[in-house]
Image (tube, rainbow, N blue to C red; front, side):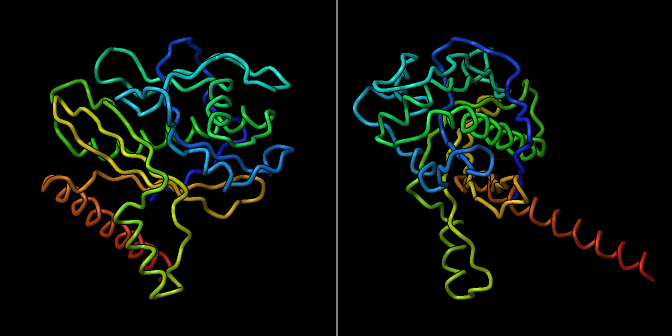
Length: 257
């Protein structure tokens, strides 16, 4: 599980685009980073699935308009940021929703979100997705492929469904309260194209205690147990991490002697 502090200046404002393809997944806003009082619970619920309009098979999201929402009081940017995540079916990269699209998505779900908070929420949303992709790449480096690397084929937000691992952690917390932890505030399933083979990853998003004015998030990214290969990969990584921790402790012990 990887802890991700949100930097004071989120690095996701490098390139803009006007394409209609977006990654609109999780939106987290901490009231210490702006003057608003939007709660984590409210932002968590913004991950609820859309209904009504036709959904894209690639992301289960309808087309998001760039027009101001009814009753909107301040203009929101319509520029979009290109991610570092390559698309499997083209040479392009996935793109994040603009602040206006993001706000429209929240409005259509019935959530009252301060308009002045939207840009911060989009920055955090984009940052977390970039970090999730970096974690996927760490797993993929264990594989030897002759192609040009993994690419994201499709994804799906499942905020109302606990993953098996998250469910086990919650059960363990009831039996051993000292091990208890709040449930993840969101879950995504990402399917990548690994040289023509589809591989599903499960991503659980946890909120950790803030460090001063910096919100902390934990990402638990791992291949889904859909195959023996994924099971072996998870065992290999867990064994390697355990060995590295043991070696680090041994080195500390030698230093103290």
